[in-house]
Length: 477
Image (cartoon, one colour):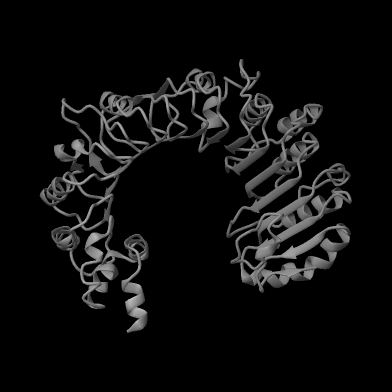
C-alpha cells in the first residue's frame, strides 16, 4: 500500500509520462488500482489508438473520448478495421474543442478513402500532421495551419493546386514527406522554413520555390517516362545549402544525359552525405554517379545500394574507372555498400573508390542475400596488388561463405597497411557462423595489426568507436 501511495503522490507530469508508455487499453485499466488512480488516465494529453484491443476500434475511441476530462495535445489513430466516416467526423469534431498539436490518422486500405471532415481545418495549433489513405479537400475559407512544422501525406488523394496552397499556407513547415499521392502529377513546394523533404511516387515534376533552407532531400520516383534529365538537373540549382541527398530506385538511370559527360554547372558545396542506388555494370550510371560525387567537394559519406540489372559487358566500365584514377574525392571518409555480390564490376568500383579517396577511413560491405549464390571469384592478379593505405575500419555483414565473399575479404585485408585498426565480420545466419570461424586464422594472417571481431548474426553492427556495447555473444581475436 505504501508503494501505491508513493505512485499516487507523483507529480501529474510524471504520472502522465508513465501512462504514455502504456497501450491505451492498459492505461485505462490503471483505474482499478485505487480511487486516486480512477481517473488519472482520463487526463492523458496523448491518445494513441490501434488494433491491438479485442474491441472494435470505434467503440474504444468513443469510450475514451467520452470519459476524457483533460487537454488533448496528441491524437493518433492507425487501423485496418475500417471505422465509419461518420465516426471519424465525430471524433474530429470533439477534438476541435481542444488545442490538438499532433494529429495522425491512418485508415489503411479503406475504400473509398476517408474524406477529411471540414471541421479538421479549424485545428489552429497543429504542429505535426500525418494522414494516410484520405481525401484532402480543404474548404475555400481555409487559411492554413500557421503553426505546422511537419507534414506527412501517404496515399492521400489531393490535387496539385490544393497541396501547393496547403504547403504555402504553412509558413513554419520544416519537414515534408509526400509518398504515393493520388490524383496528382506535379506539385510546387513553397516553404521558406523547410529543412527536410522526401518525395516518393510517380510525380511528373516537383517544383521547388523559396526553399533555400532545405538541407536534407530524399527522392524516390517510381516511373521514368515523364521525367526528363533537365528536370532532375534543375534540383541542384535550387538546393544551394543541401547537406544530405538520398537518390532511390532509378534516379541515376533517369539522370543519364544530365551528368554522364560533365559536372554540375554549380557545385553542391555543402553536400556531405550522398546515398544512391546504382547498377555497377552500367557505364552511364557509373559516370553519372562519379560526376555527381565530383560536384560535391565536401562529400564525406557515401552510401551505395547495388541495383541488380541485366548482365552486361563489364569491359567499358572497368576501362573507364582505370582511366579516371587520377581523380580524387579528398574529403570522403566513409563508404557503405549494400547488396554487394563480388562480381568484377562491383569489385572494380570499390577499388576505384578506395584508390581515389585518400581520406577514407571506413568501409562497410553488406553482401547480397541470394538463396542461389554462385561460387565464383572475379579477383585477378592486378586487383590483388592494390594498396589501401588509409583504411582504418572494415565491416563485412551478410557473409554466407561463398568463394567470391571469402576472396574479396582476403583481398581487402591483404591490401591494407598497418593503419588498419579493426575488422568486424558478421555472418548472415548462425548456420554460417562456424564456417566463418574456421576462416578467421586466414583472415588474421592477412591483417596482422588489426583487431578482428566476429559478431553474432542477430547483433546490430556497431561503429568503430563504440566498443562499450560488446555483447557476450561477440568474440574478439
